[in-house]
Length: 411
Ligand code: GLV
Ligand code: MN
Ligand code: MN
Image (cartoon, rainbow, N blue to C red):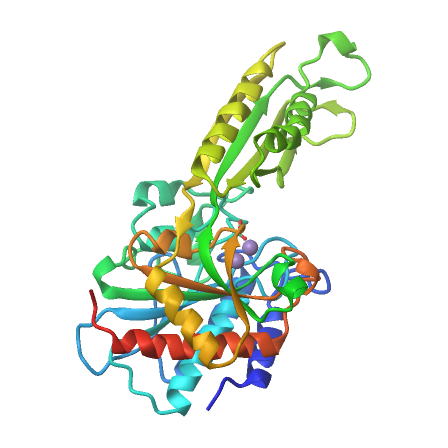
């Protein structure tokens, strides 16, 4: 029996309801009311498909189907279930829904896994609430110290730990997972770009994921009256920030080879129309396929920032995330290709320009990713859309690949 396209579509729609911005895309921030609603839905479905549900000390959700031989490491399938502000219904959610569908196929086809199968729904991949991104996977793999986690707060100063407690999660639960308990990680994700749609290809098999870094810049100036402070007596934090931000596109272009730089978040203080801003914080997201280009972009960005330190302006930079470009597992890539071909699903190799939890997990276990087409290449916006038939095709590939991985011996 094959993936149930209608059920997949229905699950996407049902999860889509859990947004704090109805009618304006999906906004599901980590540890929010909408997180709790989506979490309850995912756990309910996991139980329905015969999985044993647990959560770790970050609130990552696991649904486990025990394997026939005890003590074997798990084959994990899933993605994240948080969103960007006013994002779409598929980024992350598609991979979680497909994970649930893989579990449903195991149950409906009465397949006894040899290795345990785990479906996973990860928190805070986007970093939309606590910054940086990939928090659930970094935390789970021991890449985020307890001390650093305890310091994480959102833009209103709410600590991550307190936010967890608010929705009934327990930050004292075990956080770090023993790497030896994982056999492989598979993630389906929407492409978030135009290539598959343009080429008319059903799935992309991801070869590599771009490296990325995220900087948080704080510009400190002096507040003052907008009407009475002469132009030559100002230390305007926003003007300094804007000048730096305005230079970044050219900086990225001069490095080239697909290097991209984005400022997507900016906060102005005190944010009054007639007050000279005394403080601005903003993010700089830098990505490139080659690590040397990321490092060069960071170097030039810091150089540009240093020239902004003048006339009562002080600028500090904090690195929120740094992650090298990653290659995904060759063996899994060839199994994904073979299963796609056997199922007569058109496929091609792809590079990912977006970050994914697989780039964290790939340091510890064999990882594979499958992309499906995004309508008009749009993502991180309410218009994000993918066809349920492609989600179903992707599910079938993952279902077969999981079974193949369970037949192979652990290396
Ligand atoms: C996640 O969507 C990212 O690429 O930042
Ligand atoms: Mn995203
Ligand atoms: Mn995503």
